Length: 269
Image (cartoon, rainbow, N blue to C red; front, side):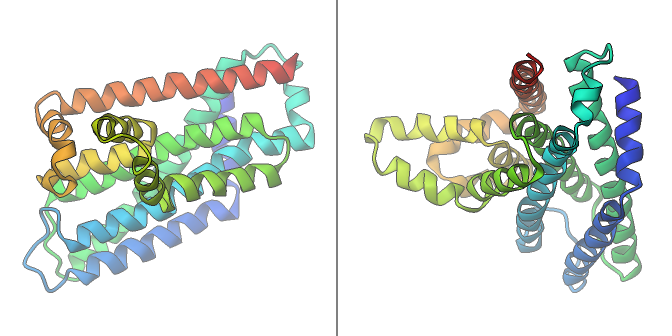
């Protein structure tokens, strides 16, 4: 697993597109931080906070899905997977190594760009609280984590990079762009008593939605979700909220890696 992790790290850092992410995130966050220069300080859920979360939700999942799926689909397409299958490497070690390498590489480049943007904002005179910055940063890192794993699952299922790209974009479009519309349309077709349970179940199935709701609650703005989410808001705002988040991320990892293992086992057979 360690060998695959290091190999994936080296492969990522040698690609020009990897450093494009650094430039992109520096530009995006610097501009957003500078927008709030006229404010006395940023500490809660403001308009700029909502804008930053939306931009992160639009960009990060798409890039991570494509990156994760291409990592495996490229090896499937060029025959490297068949060669690797002849070595005494377990499928679990292969997947965890891939996941660890990709997550480390993307976290490092995002952390550097976020730090540079924060420095530019502070030099420009922005008053940003540490807690606010940490929540933005953690929200982004957890999005990287969840959608890298999702991308790896897609990569184990497809045969070519073109299929990986198509499915990644389709999943991003459904989970991020049209999720609220699709959910509202579906809820209009079911009896009223089951609407609330379905909404909560849908939140659990979409990691982007789960993380968005969780962190908005941490900014004491859970009231924007309405009465249907009152129990969720209370639960997330309690001391056990972070434990629930940790359990969700662990279950997410186990479930998606297990599905990816099944796909790879079928291919090896």
